[in-house]
Image 1 (cartoon, each protein chain N blue to C red):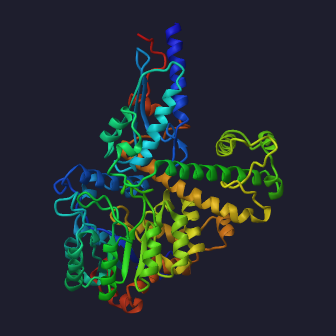
Image 2 (image 1 turned 90 degrees about the vertical axis):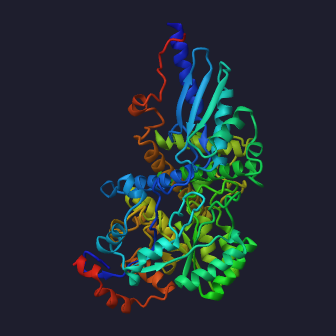
Image 3 (image 1 turned 60 degrees about the horizontal axis):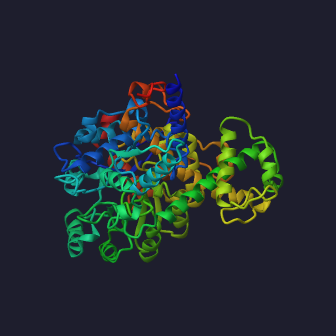
Length: 340
Length: 265
């Protein structure tokens, strides 16, 4: 729960968090080292100075770090923890669903654990989706189309094998497909950040929600266009939001575009923990106003009501969270008492 | 000493040429982004350039476009030196370096990896983005000078050349847009319109707001990359800002800038 300076309680769903192990012991090769180094560079490049972590902690933080940063020091009520396997880079994977489910087990009312699969595994992928549903009852998955798999350096949402997987997801009620479309550098063969496959997949799978993490940046215009056409396409603010600190005016332009094109119902907060911690992000977001000239050009405002939607209500809708019931349940949780 | 001044002026020429190479994705000079780690003129006049990027993962096609730009820049040096260009700390550094040395095309270097990548089309896309970003900057600057939309859009090249946009950044943006315009439309004459779309169409003054919104979207994407690249590179190499493309104290401390007046041996 985030309590505003005016004393209002805001329900927060952190749509994008991780519990990874990027430590040298777990790195399989140079790519594993470079991958976590790149994350660390995001962390140091865009965090306020007083929020910086030591490299060692960043590579592998504890479950207690996570609980504290999200729920005690942090304002999250519910955290969606995403799985990213990267088994070509890390011996035990980067953040597998097993690892995520383990950390979630202690406080199940606080977590939504999402799965992941790789359509390039063919039949095995379909079996794995069944396994995810039966074992973890997942409501969502994270797709990382730039992941390496043997000789392949990436895939598309429109690949026939991917379509088979999405058909199965729809059938099993795994409704929320989070797709990483952001500042990734691979696959090398494409104008790296293409978002057009989202357009086709979202049209062909109307029963699924497509949450595009990082809003397709740096392809914001393409993303906005697609998300305007498709009622089931949403934008996740992870990576875009930290600019609120280092380049607030620029953040104003981004959120201005998103509000103009997508409207306030289709934007979701996400910290991308542990690249960034949610507390400073939420505090700055609540205090933020779009610069007047940008707001006037686009005819949009970032009101308290809209902020509340972005911070939690929109994600709650997608994941069928009864906000009032959840608030009551969480009021009794050890974290809420610890935070008092 | 004559040799000292020769080496000093060659030094300047080298950095000036390198400064004309842009990061295609950001439309900013590679020297300003700090991608040129070191550029050295050796005793025999040959040149060595060390090049690096913000992350190990930076798209190799962008790396290739920049290194190709460096290669072309070095080909224009007045003393026609032999040169060596090396990319460091990148996942495809070896492939790229070997390919560049052999004068190969992108397709040859990445055959089998790049699939159907058309580097020419990619270059064209980036040229278009640069054109739009530069155009937006001068359109907004002219509006700030309190010109009406009709006056701005009615401007021909001759009028543009004498228009005042201020000094410093504004002046350099003005020149950069002119360069992009002339590159796109080489036949443009003094009496021709200076503000047209990338496709060469006139922009009606009542449509300028909508058109600027489109240009803004292009800029937002490019700035995202620029800000991210700067942050990542700084974090990776733990360095200070490069000011105005000139090497700063930290560059000297880290021995990234060759001595300006070292006598040739």
